Amino acid sequence: QVQLVESGGGSVQAGGSLKLSCAASGPVTNRYCMAWFRQTPGKEREGVASLHLLAGRTYYVDSVKGRFTISRDNAKNTLYLQMHNLEPEDTAMYYCAAGGTGACTLAAYNLSQSYDYWGQGTQVTVSS
Image 1 (cartoon, rainbow, N blue to C red):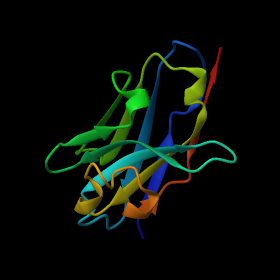
Image 2 (image 1 turned 45 degrees about the vertical axis):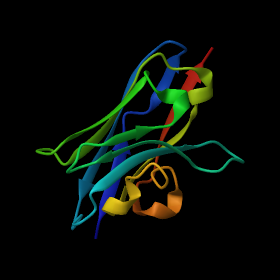
Image 3 (image 1 turned 135 degrees about the vertical axis):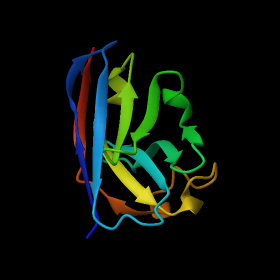
Image 4 (image 1 turned 90 degrees about the vertical axis):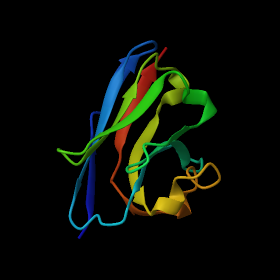
């Protein structure tokens, strides 16, 4: 069974940094697109960034461009989200997701239905 386990969340002040990790285990085969989503209570889950594991192609939502970087350590089978210059608006539960290669397109990367596997989430809280 595929498992995605996020870690690295926490509480920081505005302007601070955090690095989220997502460790993947199990038969994650042909799931070449991995992504980070975030969600706040009462709102839909928002796609933040995606990474095509073979092509290296990335997509970011406009609000995080220049501040967040998605990457992967293949040896550790771990996905990362490095977040700098955090803003209170970044406060959310952050989720890791894995999907087929078709998820990593401009039209699909930020759609929850593009992904098959999800982690349990890690909370990020940014105070002003």
